[in-house]
Image (tube, rainbow, N blue to C red; front, side, top):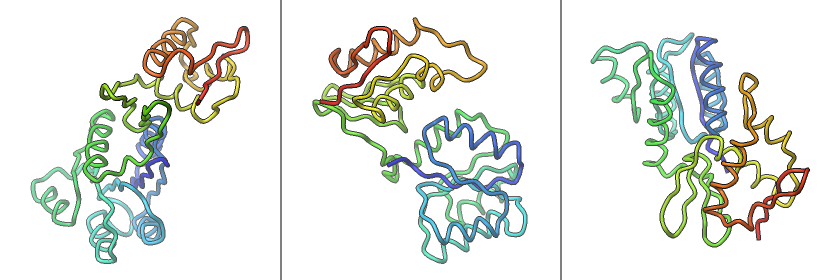
Length: 221
């Protein structure tokens, strides 16, 4: 089961950027731009992590967190805000936040902090048991074997997610190209072969079959 992230950010451009980035990182995302709407959704639904801006319409991020905490919502929270004064940081942590990121920030920094918070709360509940005791963690991009974790590249992670979701099916090269490469990127046969080779080294050659002139098939057992 994938990790669900709730996002409150009232800047439309940043909101869209963060949603796209989080989706590409393997998370489910629900995003809003209004404090009251956020409050209603946080009362009604369960999430694994909450990202809160502070200066938003109707109910600011500090008041929102105090409100949902008073109703027993214990979901970890990271503030993402341009309010960078020491008093603001203190207010954020006093309201019950796990972390506080000052804008502007790099998306990679956000990802690192999200992963750290989720790990502390054991919320990376998307682990998938594959074969021979190997565990695949899409959120961290790791294959965990008896020899320890093996870090996958972003595209290797996406490729393995495709194989796992379509196990036993023949997956065409065209489908993989469309899923792995963005519209402004040029798909590469040699790169795909390298990703397949790297996955086979860990999973075993027999797990990913090459189907001549058609594509690949992931064999689960």
